[in-house]
Image (cartoon, rainbow, N blue to C red):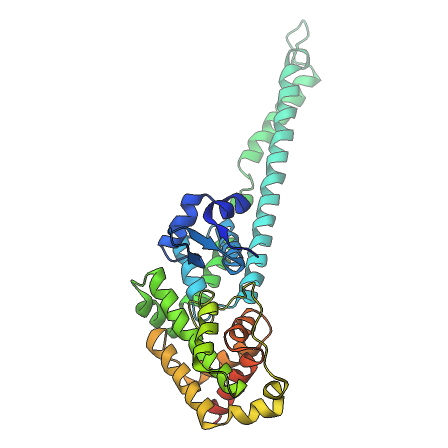
Length: 329
């Protein structure tokens, strides 16, 4: 898709220009790039992130918590969507309960008004001053209303279950040691800082791609990394862009050939470089964390697409193989 200006994104999404600018200022949603005149431009990856943000906002998550979740090294988009569906379902059930309560109150009020309108006829007395049967009915309704006032159901207003689920969802991302370390290291970073880190990080994947290609020079690898860097601001934050990934040769993409190259000293050195970079700029990359990242990079989806865009088709799988060999040493 063609890059959109902040005004175009505002018109498409209903989010005000001022809000989008604020999201950029706090590092929640940065544009893919800026024009020479300084105008923000947004691409498909940023719009996808905005959808995630708006879903969390719909569930009344504070912006601080949304940023913590999206920045978390443990963030899993599929799991987050599952949790959002659960939360929206709970919210739907609560709203349905409020609607039922409002309808009951409306019906009761209508009955009271009808009863008041007929009070003069229903409450009339005979010439001897004795109330008729209708007066007894009015007294009976009054007593029922008094009784109901002591047993009114306020469960429709109870948000305990929803708040407890939201709390558990936040804790899944913020309680890990890796996240706490990442929060300390990223404190005070600007969106420009994050873009620099993203470019450097994706350049490592471009080196993997060059090694897999057996002949791609480092300058080409760097260009591909730069094209992908605007999509990634952490080891997991990889999203597809509109351009097509560089194609690899049939020989380079052969599973047997890539596995052989993955165990080569050059590939293992790149794994070490990747691990060191994550540890220096994000969080301590233990063998367990590195192994998990390797599996994530090779899985179908945004991670794989963005890594393949940086290094060429097959790079994500190649990196995963190299990481697996490294972690099994």
